[in-house]
Image (cartoon, rainbow over all chains, first blue to last red; front, side):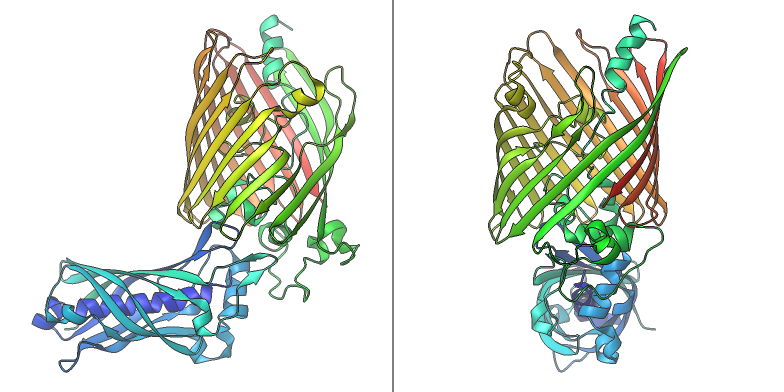
Length: 200
Length: 379
């Protein structure tokens, strides 16, 4: 329940990684240097200490990325409004946002931001494929490096990106999510699916 | 009353609607609860609620209550959600208690025959202690009058379990073996017809392995508990296995197997089946289970099918429709049931239920209709 905060950052990271990969791919290099996310779906899978798991979901993924010729990292960032995370029940949502993600503490806590997205060899122009990426995720006011896998495929004039990566809640200064004997394990997995359109 | 109606009554009537344990609620898959162990001490569901389950009942499931963002400082459930509305404070320490009361009204009819009666289906006290991986669990209550047997003190479940940090567990005692989907309605054909009704607990040992995505439970037993206690000739070795795989937080598949050896009362038999649970939307849960029930000694094989689709129309207001069926064999006719139900949870631990059952027996032109109204109070 309290993992919603973790979920949001993870989503942001995943989205960022995906966009980066897309931008770095051939589509971005050949035709455009900037891309904007459109449809997005972020899901953070939170395993429970008693077995099973739940997901925190949001579609509030936004951002714009562009290729920096001087580096393999993408300029720009992707962000997720953490208040939009939904775990399916209000009890989990409220505890996650208020007690663990602490979104009331200010701007750095309200959003999860993925930046410095680096997809390495993909910047040389591949539009379909699979790649490892690295990025930096700011969550709960804490900036940490993340790494994961992304898959990209062309869909008309857009690119569909799907990425996933694990994050550890404790790395972001989020206290152990636990309520009346039921808790979320420290490692959660973020999965992001989004479409990116090139900027005209 | 004709012989046929008498038979139908025996199968679907008062006997099967007698006392039942506080039920598990697989419909909460729509709220992303794919395991029973979040809210119940038993991984198979039902029975005493954990503190988390108590809090969830009040703050998330009840129509007229809302989330308390700040739990009690000591981390224990308190107030209306707690045992006896918190009258005992924290005097119980790590011990959790619950009282389950289930006054009910039952009306049934077939053709020109009908009858009604009021029942106190449950009047149980349940208790548990959990710490350092260990759980000690027990419940005791009043077994209502059934047939020629008068009411008596009874304990359906009492067991001790241990689960390691790696998710390996063992349970010893009297418990309901895990098989298929543990619907709250113990008369569901996947429970009553396969021998997982309200009084079908076993004395045995269960080993389990739980991970983030799966739960495996294997039970071995010298026999059904009531047969062992009463020495009624029904004692025989039996074993069950159940594997649940969580494909997602809202998608679950289950495979189960059962073997019961021959006893003086029953021929050797077994069952195998699969189930799928799916919550396509946050207020809708669909469970479907299919089983093959195989009986030696010329008993043949019957197929059992149960579906339950539950919809939360408004917070704490649930409707369900459950078609169920069983194919016939040379020894028993086939049957088909429609079960329509409505449940309202106005406050913490109060469940008002109204169910309608329409049963048709193969070879009979008469239907058996049952209306069951229940007030489940979980104090």
